[in-house]
Length: 185
Length: 295
Image (tube, rainbow over all chains, first blue to last red; front, side):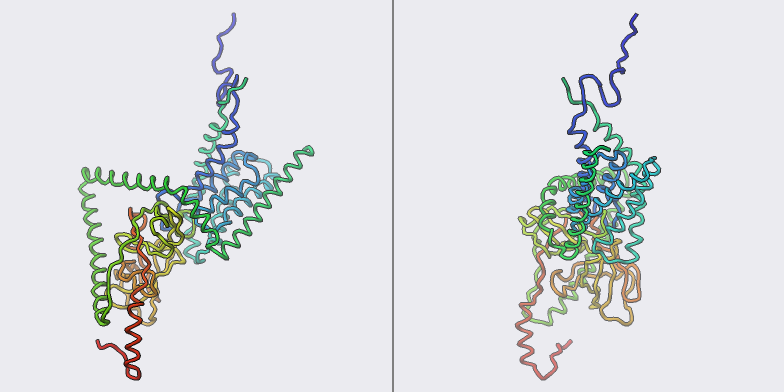
């Protein structure tokens, strides 16, 4: 006797495995679109009197890079950083430089230390965020005072705490990205 | 790793390093010449501003809806509203006092006309650089509405900042709390003049011009003095919260986070043109003798 067909045998978390394949638009488009949207965060009607909101564009870039290494091309920092610069209030070139150098550095470091765990990713992200925020402050043209140096600490802390949440969001988006929705054959 | 893969990895590094280099160059150029890329920025914010404006409208609507609900269910909110009105009234009183002082001064000089500037446009604040160390905000009005760089931006409770760059339908303003922002102010009750500098953490630093005994007290309200043009005189700026050696730390009166609409006013050129002619005549007439106006 033939046992009844298990409906989940021919599908997985990303949908049916028969007759369906990943859509290349989603596979490559989702990271870019989410990072672009995150770069537009300054246009949200929240008027801050002090730097408080984490740099969402950079945070999403970092998270995509750490969750899915190799998905974003190495040169992605150039266009994404330029877009971030248009809205972030930093001098133009700040994002291009910092985004690019982050991607390059992570690539080099990961080649040397290929082991990975979430805690290691979190540590990497924390170090990268600290460097990003302080370098951004240095380049911003704002007056360098001790108030400013202390002012960034809450923002940095918030960014570091936000990383696991963003990582979960990116993991969800990654599932969406790999949905098999394209019909083949 | 085969030859092709190695080659593509190599080009990846090359392009990325190239991008980084471009970033360094652009950064150096834009630190050197901050306004060089303003066209790009304003065009970008023009594109996004309709959506951002919709967001700002939604924020205001939801806020007022919540206020209505709170008004029904909480008597405390009415109390809060009264307090807020009281706050505005207090500011207005201080401004009125400043105006009185101003009038007294102006009456000394005859033939001076004194009129309130008509605002160029009313706009919503649609966003701010909340992640950056600089304090900029975005407005939903631009050149097509007559907004030009340099114009002062004023809310109901006081000065907010000045227009830095303007696109067709949006513009970028520098808030008073930016460290590069500096406004000539005076105490509302007398003529103690000072500069109000941004401190980037939401407060202002009042630096007295006349150093000596610090006459300031907590609770003193500072208004714009109109010195040097740009900002019209008599607009409320900040209230002193802490006294320091060379001045005070003051809190903003018009918190941009709590304002729905702001008015963009024309640049104040003062009555310099009106003033110049009579004062020169005066100088000519009274040359040799002291030209101090009698008190």
